Structure formats: C-alpha cells, structure tokens
Length: 269
Image (cartoon, rainbow, N blue to C red; front, side, top):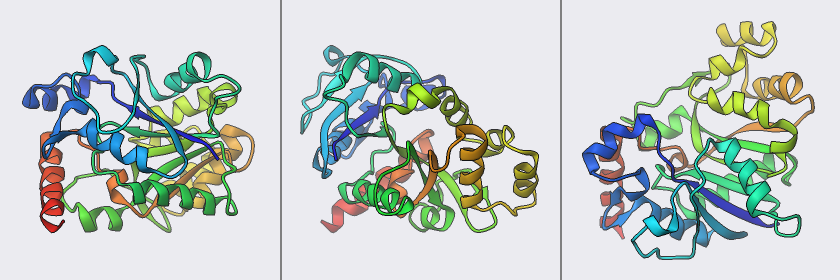
C-alpha cells in the first residue's frame, strides 16, 4: 500500500502571537533544538514504512532557505485541509500516481516519531478488521495518555461514556473522499476543536446522549457515518497511543513544553 505524507505548513490568524515571539513567518520555521519543526517532521516522515513522497503544503520552495535532512516536495497552495486535498487530487496526483492514502500532519506537531506514525496506521487498520477500509481516519488522543506525558498542555477534551479524548493533529485519508464527501468533511474539520458543534448536525438522540454523557466513541462514529456520510465505516475517530501526534504548539507556553520535553529526550540519548 502506498502512502504520501502532507505537512500542513500554512499560517492562520491564531498564529500571530507565537510567530511574533519567535520572529518567523510560519510555525514550520520555529526551532526545536538546533533544527526547525519542519526539519524534524520531514526526517521522521521519510522514515515511515510505506511513505513514498513527503509534501510541504503552504510554503513555496523559493522561500525555504534551510537545507532539509531528507527529500520533500514543496507546494505553496494555501487553503483549508479539504481544499488542499482537492488541489492535490486535481493538480498533483494523476490516476496512475495517486496514493492509496495520504497521511496529513500539521506543521506544529514537531514531536512526531516514526514509531508513533506507524502505530497510528496499525491502529487504523485494527479499527476496520485488520486492513485500511475507511475513507477517513481522524486521530484522537485519550486524556490520560496526553496528560501522562504533557500534563500542562491545556487541551480541550470531549467527555464520553467510555473515554475522554482530545483531537490529534494527524489523519489518514483516501484522496478520493473529497469527491464524495468533501462538504461533510469541511463541517467536521471546521468544528474539530468543538465536537459539540459537530455533533449538533446529527440526530437529536445523539445530541441528548452526548449531553448526558451516554454517547460512546463507537456510537459517535456510527452516528457520523449514518447521518452524515450515509454509509458505514467511512469516517472514524481512532485513539492513538502516542500523544506526540496531538501535542500541537498554538501558544508560547506549549512551545516551552515541547522544548523542555525534547531537551530531556536529547539528554537521554
């Protein structure tokens, strides 16, 4: 099975504070140790089994002046996640070169590891009977897993009957999903920081179960696929065992956390 990786390296208005502090044009340029976030991510993703190409989306190659430690293809197209997937399917992939799945990560999760990404792919497979069948797998991180490594990360959590989780910044998707369910995915992704808003578009019973914490993660997946995707096992939230895949850097205090964590890792090596 062929995978391509896409690093989302654009900027948004919410990045202004941290970009001003670090004096960089995007979070991809922020330093972690002696290298940038993007250098770390490109090296890691090139090591992941099955990945063919690593794309850096949102930065023009002419604007990146730092030599990368491994190959990457720059694509300066600026848009939201689903519009970027539409662009890749329309302008970059051909029917002969389109990968089976794309692994999409945000440029502000610099602590991702080869093993963590490979474990995420395996967990996605286990969710659908041992092989990748779904159109879209959204990475989630359980609260106890996140706080065990990053107790002060201040993530927003969704409390359910069986598990409490936050959204990760890693996903796995079939490129063709944008043709059949692009608008639906836009709704989900635009509300990924507030799953309550996302679930409001589902059935009243699903909302009631969520409010009274009777909704399970499996029940949420079933409702999303029944009422939004209109077919089972199309879009699935899956729990990752690696909080590094969800430890994003939006604020200066989160940058301090990842830098301290990375410094401690480096001392142990």
